[in-house]
Image 1 (tube, rainbow, N blue to C red):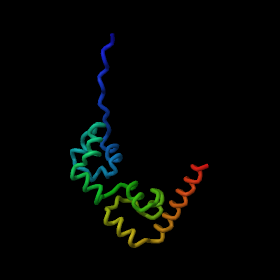
Image 2: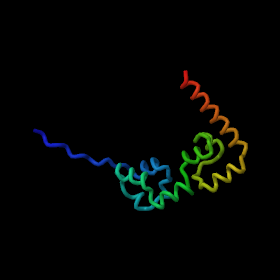
Image 3: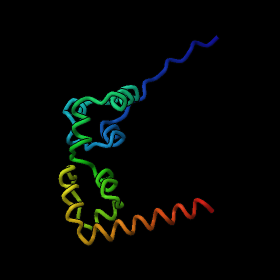
Amino acid sequence: MTSPKRKTVQTMKPETAAKKLGVLLSATPAEFQEGVVSRDELNELQAKPPAWLVELRRNGPHPKQVVAAKLRVSISGLARGGITEPLTTAQIEALKAENPEWLEREQAVQADNRKEALRLKER
């Protein structure tokens, strides 16, 4: 008979966990940045987010993938528009209100890309 294998705990670096949570690592608490995060801890953070996580998700600063999604553009579109730093929710809303030409252009490109992807998927 073989003895049952111990279940190993899956862990991830804080950078990976922050990305999965959709937050900027540098804005998280020090204890989060300095440790490792287990799969169970990540699931717990997603199911019952602590106050700091709720605040970060609501007000930012947001990582570029979140900024791009909120502006309905690609990450490349952000770069073409000169946005290279994380933005807060207030900054994103101000940018939407200002609606610069590059943002309109990149939103149109992104919308066209989505339509084309949908068309190809339906084939």
